[in-house]
Image (cartoon, rainbow over all chains, first blue to last red):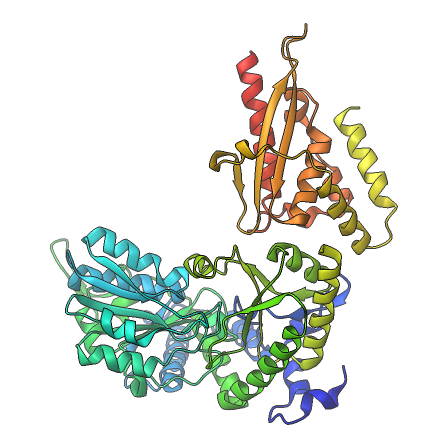
Length: 415
Length: 147
């Protein structure tokens, strides 16, 4: 790989970064792996892998229970991980950070607990056309159970929310707004600060799905005034199976427990249980301890590089790839919002995304093809699916060049 | 030809190719020669849903009145993705024109030998696995009707 081109203009040391990710040196189908499926999951740096490895070698014990040294050490480590995440999101209190299994789990928790207490017949829940299924189905289910109505904020052809429609849809019946920060398919960066402010005028709480935003932008939940902010560790270079629900203290105190069991209680008798304070009230059972620790290692890693540096570099990749893609005849980009993260979905005239993805895979290039778990959005654009290249800060312009050549080859074969 | 003989023929055909590109180009060509499903059969119940590409598959039993009463199954199909279509065409070439019992018993080892195993992994890819399952289920249904 020619190093000069990769380093130009950029404030991050790409060669050093690539060396931190062991998987990037492997071969796929005899070719060097080009991993452009970061929207689905990100690769893990050595520091995260080492943190997990170290947990099992030296730290393994159950937390919040034992008086023995190992248990106390790991409890401290786990709570330090919580504090790392609190600091990263600029949450007011560490107990506003709840460990969950991931974005879907976090949304299910809020939809279920919030729905139980605050949603009744005839009420409305407001989501948008660009939501991932994970931010549709939990609300759809709550609405079905309660006889409430799911309302949808429309988007324009560029894939941007229509704010005038959003304002119109915020009514006295709206109980909660659940909206994505960055669209996993379109890359659109929603102005969540504005969306939240508009909802708050009517005292409506807002949940933000930050699954795609967390690896690309810095998040300040107090500045945003988000009532709930959720994400998955694996999308931000951390382990799978763990995620975060941030919630304002007052909301988390108001919500009833979601799943109950070990660790969530103060006292239990067969007649009545008194539940623990935050955050334990929402953390039933032995948690994904190494997951929490691995996530904190991942957060430390991106903060060492600097989230602003990451965003600037990824934007450069996005612009470079977009320009190259548009030079290919028959390519149409899906999602052309003014504010966009490094997610690039497109279709090629007359070709099925599956076919293109299959040929690219033969060339060692991992992209996502299909509906990206956003079927309503695919229906909006009238396409069966799309091809998505999503970049992380360990990707390079050289990889984009190879991807563009591969795409041209695929088009030639398939047409 | 028996199912095994056709599988062997396909293995030899694919051995001629030097690289994956030629193999996929051949697969794409095979898709073009597929016994196409009639439009009237392209209904929801004939749709084998993979997550990404769609396959419509229809089967008919013919010659069931011959002395052995077994009859032979003939498949027609279509897909919206061209590589998937090639794979369906291969499956039809192997299984069509055989008795239900022969289809049920088929092992279909050739898929591995021609380097398409990855399409058999139970991921959300192209539904090759569901396709084979449906072809065998059809065979089972015809067999049970005949007994």
